Length: 377
Image: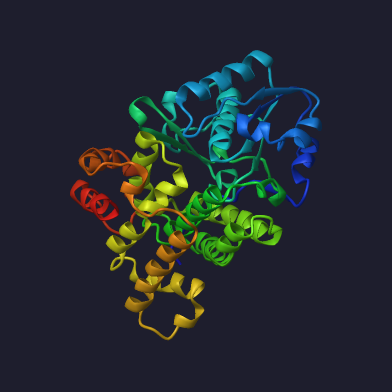
């Protein structure tokens, strides 16, 4: 067996009301509570905040959070002398919370830790509560921030792994269909790209990726079509968490690299951006990843086990594409206001994400990226 390293995720509490149990695991003193205004307005944070002795509420996190937003959150926490941090919401609040907890605990300069493994200090005690079933951010050592010019920059280090996470599917019941679909596809992409990651794929990440794909593919449409189906929502939340554990150890690749410019420049939701590029990048990878795609095809289409690997690989791509369409997401770049003339600049921007592209099963250069955006247009 090839040697590998696997970092487990946070300790978990799960089930209805589990977010209210986090206070018993955090130290006394002020807690920086990082979220967004919509989550607060929906009342989702009320029960959790009520269990905390002193809350420093930071609810200014936007989609694709900026470096300025992160540094403002850190300044608020530092001014209040906070002793812990909770991130509550989708991937954006959780990413800000992870980096805020690290910067407050370590006193590092943000601009010295971009990249992989450069954050080596200690974070403040950190708990995360996802309210969408997709990003898996509560499970990962990765945080992504939007910097000048719309460039997405990431920090990837075990020092960002939360101490605790609460998986409470009741918090996801109010998600609109489009958000349910986009975040679900995001989680599916995490599982698929982790299973085929060129640099760090390993037996443990494979286990999590396979089970994540099974849970997500079986339950996505039920969660979309039956928004109060708590069983489907619970399966999606667990699947997203397992996919997060998988890609935390076997990083994502080409789909994400080509999706990031769509979010950073055009502010499309991250899961939707992944959905738009999914078929095309998988087709680009099809021969290089054929055996792995064949294995995954048997997870979502068990009846295909007797087919050859090429047919199974094609079936996986077609099945995932059908899930995107059935979920209600419009599958073309032009459906979302992106002009064909923008493709060269999107391709150039995608090339900045070499930390992801190196994980792809085969090379994606700038010419490939242009071709893939053309196919998605």
